[in-house]
Length: 172
Image (cartoon, rainbow, N blue to C red; front, top):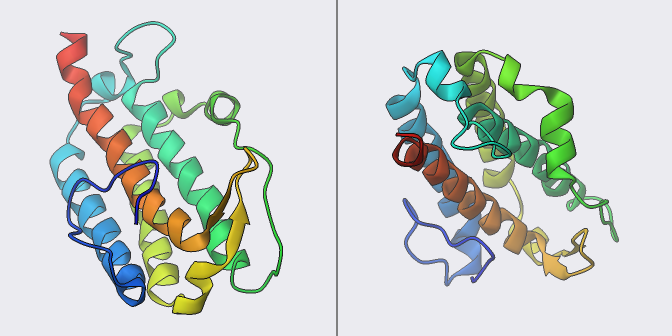
């Protein structure tokens, strides 16, 4: 399944629709465990540092991933009981600005992000296959399926975690 954000690690093929929930849930679990293990000891000052003015810090990028979890939580649940649904566009800059992620301790953000994703893994693992075909209208108006959203969620997460890991190269 082709999505906006390709999955980079922990998932091989997604040719069989019936395997998507388990493979994506496992990919989320492994991605979160791997990231937490490697970056839980990140210094607070490093997590707060921006690569350049106008760009997000590591804390703010992780905050954006918490927002992504929150928005997708609603999608994953509502797809299973609402016939026709859509959400307003996600205004990422406003969400990150209003929540002041930069002022929270790195370890607290990491713990919350990990816990939220553990819950999403549970939801995805228990999602009946037929709900992956439920249509969903993105804020842009584009029509996709919940299966697309589930797969793209992991790709989006991996994309931003790679940004966090690569920030050191641009700050030095």
